[in-house]
Image 1 (cartoon, rainbow, N blue to C red):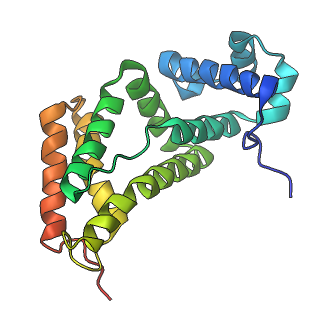
Image 2 (tube, rainbow, N blue to C red; image 1 turned 120 degrees about the vertical axis):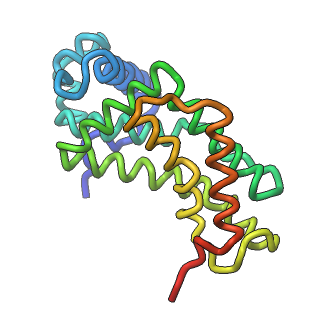
Image 3 (cartoon, rainbow, N blue to C red; image 1 turned 180 degrees about the vertical axis):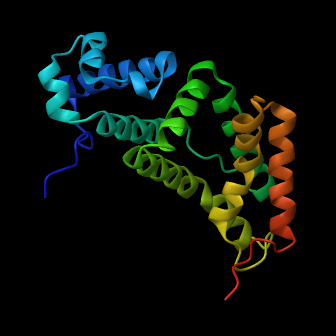
Length: 202
């Protein structure tokens, strides 16, 4: 089965082309939004032939999907501190720094807005967050194994609970989360997990 456009992970010159194109696509999303994303314009910005871009990514949604895949791959790895609470605090700090970053925050805002009206972009965004949640879920699983959290705790639900209030304020009120907000979110998710709120029910 052939790979979906934009999903091949090449090396060498091809990797440099991919990096340039994804950087250019991100620039357009940050500066002008999803509606203005055009493969020919991206090719011009990246100084790459249009044919190369059309052949490799095929469509705007294919390009956005690959951009999200690249962001998931290059995001900071999880931190393991030896305690569930401090691990969740580290996760909250990463989310806070991402949303507060001028470029990254604008990029996520553009992609989330696009996902609301484009099914393929929505699917790519869902896959992105699946990867990130799966990256951090072991922190919760290890907390369960150490006896810090109840057996049966849904690790993914706890990780999502850390970032949920930060995204909510950021998207609905335009409030860029700060360090104290990140700490509150992590402590609230941890307290709920300790209380058994996220234990899976049969």
